[in-house]
Length: 186
Image (cartoon, rainbow, N blue to C red; front, side):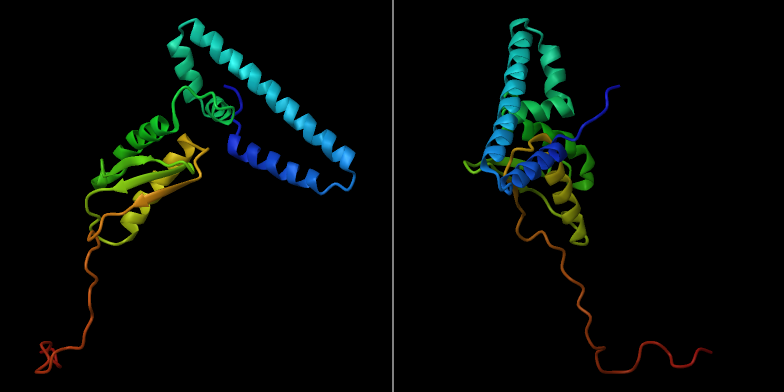
């Protein structure tokens, strides 16, 4: 099995290196280095686009599906705007995949849309009995699934149901009167 690569980590490293290049005092060296990165990204993007065209022309839907669902290749397809599924389609698939792991809240999340800024809007449905950490766990699992399936999104906005909070236990002073627990145990 080939070694797995973290596309997001590599992208972050590339961004950091480009930021370092911007600090170079020699503008000629800086411009050449930035051009080198740009040319290489364009070359790899064009090659990947050609691969997708060949697979599509061969009507090899299973191969295209395998490429689109491979973690590394999928990330590169997204990077070059070549992924065969839209952001919304990938988010829906991620929600379908995470639903069985939501326990009693299964099915309790719906996609409202992806706005122009790239923010995914979701709505949690149902109730979240018990402690607030249950809702937090569901929210975290959903956010992770969405960001893994659609790393290009600018954010995830989850609308939480109103009135789903369990009432807090109120500890108050004991009412006046005799103590219900005997002072001495016989």
